[in-house]
Length: 470
Image (cartoon, rainbow, N blue to C red; front, top):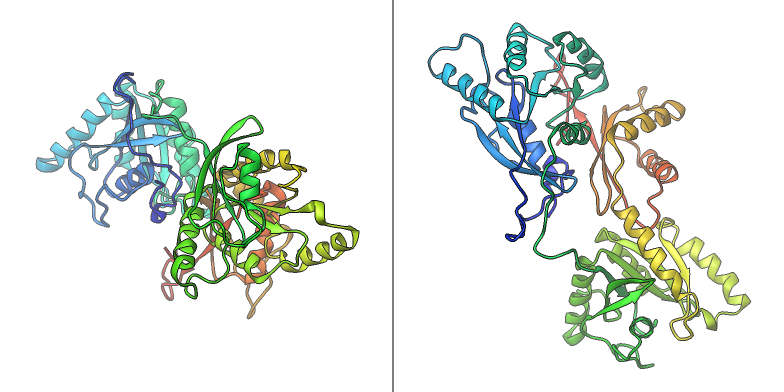
């Protein structure tokens, strides 16, 4: 499963399916320390990818050392949340500070969190002295850097003598991926995640309206009559799973029933077949939508494509029965593609014939390319450098005497790629489409849908500081 969308979804979480026969060794430990109310628990939630550490807008909520399991880039480690550290603390505050110091002593790496909006304080400077005595690697984290202005102000934190500060927004996820990469570089060799079973073949759903050749294509790859093929439309009712070898790799192909009607209008066997087809698309990673190239692109074809796009799956469009297409039909088909498929120009298109085997060897490279795009992640720094240049070259049109500005962007997740733009106000739909088009031109994403959402900064009234929705 992936991380909660509320936390950006940028950490891919998996159930701890670890082989008992292969000891992976102790997990390295990351301690998160700092004075009260700098956002340590929010940062811990960001790192572990779920809301587990208790967060309040008042200091002193966290009191003990609280460990959490975390993963990043296939590595496991433990992150320890601590209470606010203060020098010369008394009573309960002294016990909380002692717990934080113990966390530092037992950690492999320490994240020292400061408030980027406030800058360094006397308490921060005292904490640096304590950290130096521990002789542990320390990463300086400037939290609450919600925009570029605060990020620039955080450069003053060099004065703490801990090196370059990593500017992040634990609440919104800005800079989190780069911070995690730095943590991995500083940690001793972390144990690899070993699952009980290796990752199975990639799941491919063969979908399309009735009688476009889905079962014929499945049989072509399986080398046997795995699925019933008949010229009568609607032969396949249940999804048919087959492990087939395409391009030297094993894939799990699911042949599905042809969709004739909307699920809500279907009845009886056709209704349940439609539900199973929708479930097969949801369970797949990439869908191959077959169209009959000898016939006009129909409303049913459009409906199938919409189901795949709305499910967020990688997409390859295969124009089957190409052996039946003459020069005149090719001319009109090009016109139909320009008109009917203009909303998904990013889809990978192939011309093939399941009956004769024409060009079926091109399907495996197309599937790999679509899946690679589907799982692509752009580093936060690279994304924002590109976006800054784009906005400077082509700013948002002025509306009502002012133009909204994009403050920063982050990639919230993959499979499919999801991006969040933090702005000073709503963006025109046309400008949002422009950003998506330029994003594709720069980074590719061929064969994959991408999702771009906009979070305008919330207005708090005269004299109030705005913050982003969400």
